[in-house]
Image (cartoon, rainbow, N blue to C red; front, side, top):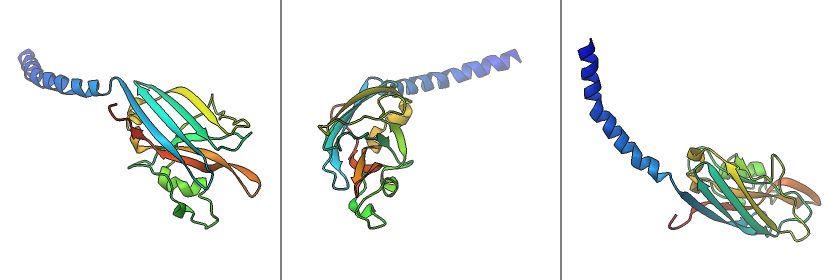
Length: 184
């Protein structure tokens, strides 16, 4: 029996070496900082524009959003959205299924998918926009790198728009498909 165990152990050595050698380059490919960005374009005639950048280093994801044209003195939700399989996109005007002239949060879901990361200040608190209508946001999150290494399949969506005099915090006002930064 001892000879059989020794023979199996020796026979397994080359396989273990090959596996270790093959895995090492893959692990190294995930090291370092991965840079992503997106231009935020207006949705629903909001006029909101901006840029978002994301830097992923290990499990630390730093997200920076700079935007203008947001409604003043309102809280604006912002998220990274992703569909389960494939690439998320920003919804076109034709996503307005009920024909009311507004692509609602629900009407945009088939394009951008559910929220994967709420871009909050802390906990569940979203940024309150001052009188200028501008946003300058930055926060580092701890994430599972395997869920966020493919950020280029996701989008950033800013929300919050007054419709017929009533503020709806869920209505999408800007969206951008995340792209890998060249040379990153």
